[in-house]
Length: 378
Image (cartoon, rainbow, N blue to C red; front, side):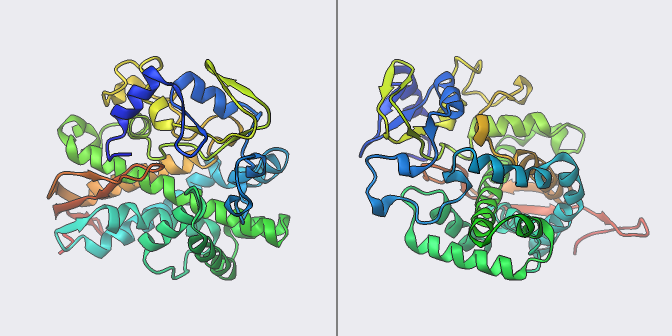
């Protein structure tokens, strides 16, 4: 898949909306079919229903993304309070503090890579704070994010990355005092506890890093169109909804496996075959969104599938949106005249979309101290 997958996806959506994948499996590209598949209980997340998979290709570590009800429902209910409105509101000051801490690292330099230096470190820091391990030294955030991606979302999963991710989970469990980890400890045995911490680490960092990166890229490429946002006057929700739809930081679903032959559109997908839903293509389907290839925050994109749909819809969508808004407000409230040093290049990853780097120059805005006096960062 190229760094711009959308022309290929548009062709598939029009001509072969349910297509065969190289090596087997099926690829769903239309919005209506995608939404139906995401909500269809006959499509299992458990790869033990994948008839074509060899034993060595099945997931060695089972997490929430691999489960079906009732186990999925039981474990998901334990997460709900931590990602609800009240909990996210309580976490907001910590998110602000962590955003400021990352900005402090480079604000005086006048130049930075906003992916490496901000979009990646902030979600990694926030998810450890949520888990109760905010003081843990986890090294380079980009390295950890790569481990979580290759060990938790990639297909097939990288065995070395899975092992490294498991080691990191043990460090989180050793460091955590309270937080979501403390809540889960009271309810779960050791294996399920490790599985849930692993799931939260993966889902809580990968999507948010992609959203912040995509939002920054959109603002830097067309900032004059979003002057109200950059000046602090406009609402961020419509903009972030449209970033999620238009850019689809998570491009496709995890694999699903029909428990029986299932009709998807005009195609019958056989029992046990792997099914991948293209969230990116569904979000650009003109049958669902007028002028789907135009970025337009005024449209209202609440029907987008960026967070999935149905019982497996991402439970952390509220936190992701709030975290992204706080992060963007922090960047443009702290840095002045932020300009790209070179055109945006996009990651070619088939599952995740985001800028590979955002090298920028900037000045600094004055900040008020506790006495109300203004000071520059220099």
